[in-house]
Length: 371
Image 1 (cartoon, one colour):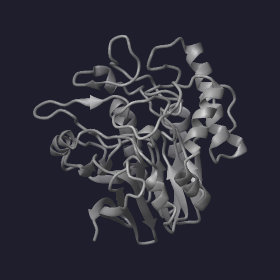
Image 2 (cartoon, helix red, strand yellow):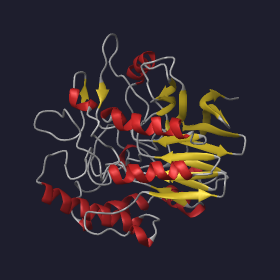
Image 3 (tube, one colour):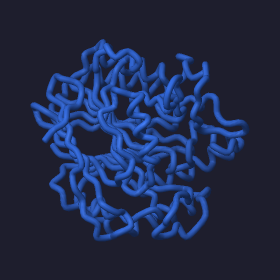
Image 4 (spheres, helix red, strand yellow):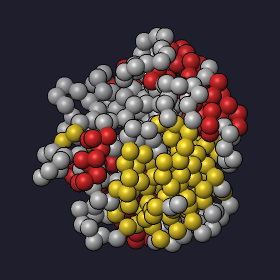
């Protein structure tokens, strides 16, 4: 089976030329892992406009979806293939966590906004009726199985998570921290206890050749501090390292068949070996991760990424300068990931090419460079 991994499509920062190329691929489905819309305007060198301010009400979120879905290339990709979808933060508000907003709005005020955002998401995305929201609650996590070949375990890492620890003073949301003992609290959860249990049970009983853990962000540890010491971003799995350790230890202990983690969020291609202990170079690889770059959203400076690569040897690749998608093909013997990048998202006629190929062999976790 063949699928494309997509995420992060800030409307103002580029044209959806990647979707024009995607619609011409021979695919079985598209997997979108979040930031389908952006509530906020940011970045530089905009090529088009949101035409309104940040949405808060249901009508305003509906209008934002209508704007994004007016794009002909996005329409073509929806018309060509079925989609599996999950959200990240920008479908509501940047860096929100459970009932806490980045601005530390009163919880009842923020939950009213979240209810509006969830309703608009349900109305505009290809979802079953069982996902219909009830106020600010909506069960999005689900499974999709394709015979004995692949099962997608589709997660929600926003609605049930613990609040990010060690935030900036007077703010909610993420931070990059060097010394934050609270980050190591085993009670912290990215998925919530119910969803975490659901995921473990599904992985344990799966008989699929490939178990695709479909989530929003980067799971691999990413030490962001050049030189001595360590620094971690608290919005992704690095903010919840004990929860990550629980999941990866469970995968290793239960010998889950061919776990592949896919994600987005960080606006760069990342290929990584996943371990229960990233600081131990002798620790075995227990799963493989492919994070797709953004469709349009601008990424961090590559010079910073190069410094991160030097500190994180479990990363096989990290590239922030290119926009596009990851084309993945799973068979009985291997899973192949082709990293597809457009030359320029400000050019509607931009071409696309493969910039790297990686292969995961059946029964052998870890990605290897392909031809």
